[in-house]
Amino acid sequence: MQEKQVIIVGGGVIGSAIAYFLAVHPRFKGSITVIERDASYAQASSALSASSIRQQFSTPVNIAMSQFGISFLRELPQHLGVDGQVPDLGLSEQGYLYLATVSGQQVLRDNHAIQRQHGVDAALLEPHALQARFPWLDTADLALASLGLSGEGWFDGYGLLMAFRHKARSLGVRYISAHAATFIHSGNRVQGIRLEDGSELRCDWAVNAAGAWARPLLADTGFDMPVHGRRRCVFVFSSPAQTPACPLVIDPSGLWFRPEGAYWICGMPPAQDDDDVALDVDYREFDQAWPLLAQRVPGFDALRLQRAWAGYYEYNSFDQNAILGPHPLLPNLLLANGFSGHGLQHSPAVGRGLAEWIADGSYASLDLSPLSVQRLLDGRPLLERNII
Image (cartoon, rainbow, N blue to C red):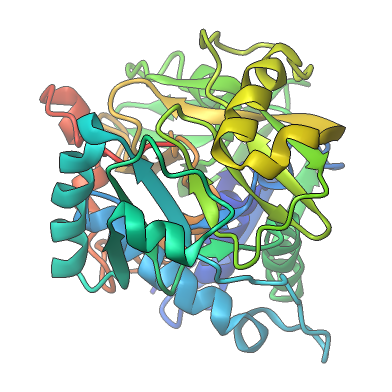
């Protein structure tokens, strides 16, 4: 294979996963450079998310990506260890618990049927069984719940990012701190990256993995990608309540919460989504979450807010699913964008898939073509009904 120069714009978990899988691919020869605008990762979505993984999706490709993701996380030391240093992400497989009222129970049943067809270890619980399993939960208004029994939970997202990055660098991947401005292209080929300081880097392949900053990079490429940086707030609270075996709970209201050490964390979908807002915590969201928390878990009526943070949610406004694979007009520019909250858990599958595309010209391990840009061009959304 002729040696190739690959430039990945974005050194977060997606970009670093692609760099790692490409560096270990047996048929790739060449150089890999990762351009990261925020060397401190202070605003990186990978570091500011709730860092969870689930298989309870409604689309087979998302299920399969999560199944590979959990197997990769379980075997992380053998993949990402460097010089005897083994990363520990504190993986906790306590499951996801989706709660539904009468109006939402059929969606849970339909999703469960798809999940079972694709090997997801989940169970539907009627209210009495739900109450028996989680006696600290108020089930009075619920009609059904879906609980992941294995292969779901949470982990250290920043730790995964750093593990991918550290391993990639040990394999010869070069990371540079710079702001990418645009892709240089001629005809139907990308030729390089222009940085904000005016300098240029040449390449044979380019990857847009710039997260919340991905859309502006494509401004002059003929494709207006419907991906926006949207703020999501995470709140940490304490309570004298006891919630043994607590999974990540998704309330019918949209509220979610889960344990985090001696505390709990939670979040709410904002009343209005605005694009590219500053990463300032909107405490009005917690004002909305508090009564919902106390209603769902009576012991939370005495909770106390400890701290909070905000991170960008790379939102695909077309269908809330990832956009993966070649740019529609520039086939040597690969897109890895619009994960809408799925990026951390799907980063191993995305990294492996796009590395295969560069090295082999196609997906080999898992067909990611349902997530290609073609569905946007055709006006054919891939609707995921289990969006948080």
